[in-house]
Amino acid sequence: MMQTQAIDTKPTPERTAQRTLNRRLFLLTWSAGLPGVIAMAWLGVPVLLQHQNLPVPIWMVGLASGVQSALLLALTAFIGARLAGKVGLRAPALAELASGRAPWCALRPQCLPGLVGGLLAGVLLWGWIATAPQAAAPIHAATMPLAVRLLYGGVTEEVLLRWGLMSLLVWALWRVVQRGAGTPASGLVWAAIALSALVFGLAHLPAAAGLAGPLAWPVVLHLTGANAAFGLIAGFLFWRYGLEAAIIAHVVAHLTLAAIVGR
Image (cartoon, helix red, strand yellow):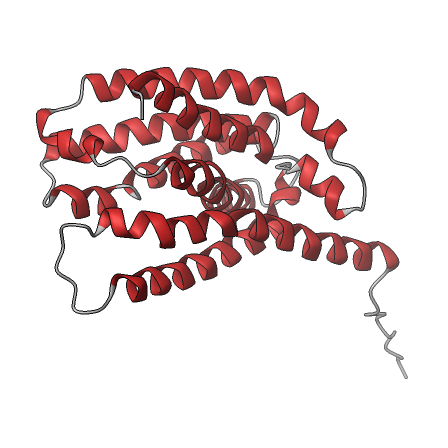
């Protein structure tokens, strides 16, 4: 009579430690993005809806938007914490914090690439705005408060688009194309960078439509292209250096653009 061998399903100490690290990383990335959610709900939503007649008070719209954004941020923070490390994507400084160590040594190598990428992106975005179609003028004139651009744009969007979406895309392509073997090929990573950059560009269209009404195709192409171009830079920095490098670049890009245009 054959005996079936019992399978030990008890988690190993290594798995337990990894799950604890993932939970802490999830909480850290989610917490990092929450100030941006609050800034957008409090300061950004009134700018987006300033010309619209609303059936409810603006604070209710801001609250609903904030809750929705916080939930989406939690989902992407969870996805990144679970999948990024499997495909070689990292948040080195936050991982050090999650492990109970000081983050500075992990952050230092990301500062220069983030600074250079941010300066380059800021100048490129200024050039893109300077050559924008006339129909896009109302969109660029209705500038978001700097706090929203730095906190939501600089941090929250990076958790949403790079840490969450790009990690998911790299993991999905790796599982389908390479059957989860080895490290993801550069071509797969670039495909994920391009796709997440395109989504990043398209995600700015609803807010632009709220500011300027229905968007003509030249405006759609202009806005999508400008933001997708930055998405390529941020995606590359995330891949090669870490999430914090992409965050630094995003913040520096907004500061550079604000310094050039004076607002």
